[in-house]
Image (cartoon, rainbow, N blue to C red; front, top):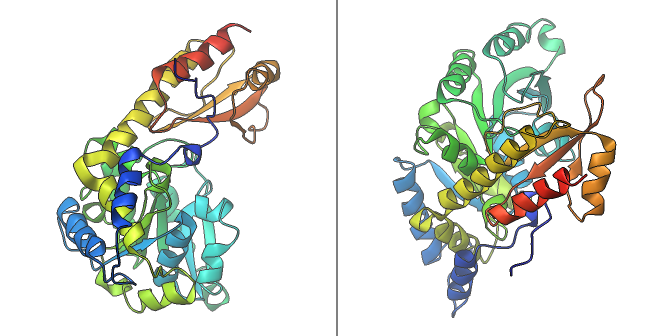
Length: 351
């Protein structure tokens, strides 16, 4: 009988998808041109063009999501510029100042939201007040959206389009942190094009590492206005791989036969199963709808300690003021199975 997976800390703890590991082994045969001149990178460019229904202005594999986000924002924002983002955004709270570093002084300005999704009226208010101090303050140049959000929610296409329309009307470029973009697609049931450039996104940071890859993210620039010297930005920041075939091989295998969408759909389905089970427990409160592969739940401290003692691994989150209990995050992966979810729910019921 297969061992129960008790680690719900992150989708980063998952093993590499077998299909991707096999693709890496195949790419490891013989010599190949370096710095993106290999056949895998050329095939990747054609594959992305097919999937996104347009030839992007640039397709740039990188190794980390932080690099992808920081490089994208550096193209959108000058040192005197500012980026609007949700208060929960990864670029704001989990990237150690990398976006500001790559922007050489550009600022991140947060917009409060109840569930990780920026309200259009709040965005308009932030834009309208941006020039209040004139030359004494940074100039707004970009909007960054997270899809799926850090709270496990997903922007509808209409919501996303309303935000990007307002941003573009004010001359702002639009970046999307798509570390869990595949999970959002699995929920929305739309095409990659509809959720990206057709929704007004200029640059997409597409994440594969959380969804089965070893170390592969893809920076896709749809708007040619933001391609100037991007490869030099990458080189200067230490993010040009000489053996790029190994990144491209991962991403090709990830896209092949819709592996990326199948992996995301499995993770989402297990999160939905988990959320439904938690919702039936009298001591549990779910503060956000579960729309991707992350589940947030508030449980009594004693119950959280019981789950930890039973060997389950997860993160304790900052509990909102005035709330009794502990907010924890449970993340389902592409390899999470029904028996893994059920084991956690059984441990919860046994307390």
